[in-house]
Length: 218
Image (cartoon, rainbow, N blue to C red; front, side, top):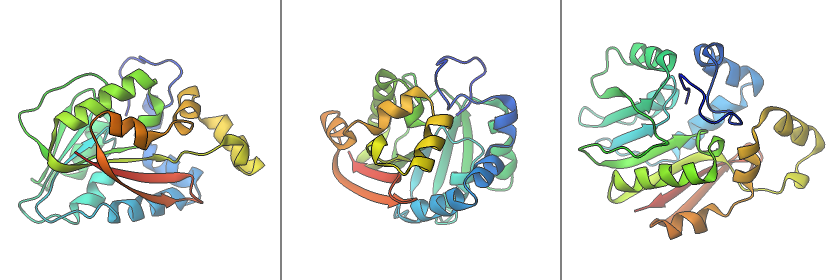
């Protein structure tokens, strides 16, 4: 997710124009190729059905939406949501020939109301970059736009103790992550989501268990 004006000064998810333009390449390079491979595994674990309708919250360039679209037939649909002009440009270019996938300029960190509901909602490596009260808004947006028995997927950092990380991993995390990320990894997300109305949790772990796909159902 990127912003035209930075709302959360300490956040790392509101990107500069340069980062927005080269986002996918930077992540692949910084992770030495591990991040794209883990994302592909995570999308594969979403159990996407051919006719699913999916909301990609904070969709960025459409990298994840492209992976998800491979599982869909002509009845399946994906709606990507972001607020960055550069991300919107890349997303629309990526799906210029695919009528199943559309884009909407919309903030996911403020209440929004769509006249449709989805089988699955994904938020990928955006959630940790918000203050906790804003994350609650995102959760409520997801709950409001899921069909009954629909699934909410949070692909982000897992919960872990910072001191348990190997020193070099800990150094990198502290160097590149925002203060909100440290708060995020310390919280019990299954308990929080259960209090907000979700249940039936499933977890998948990647990158030495520091990355997690958390699925919960409405």
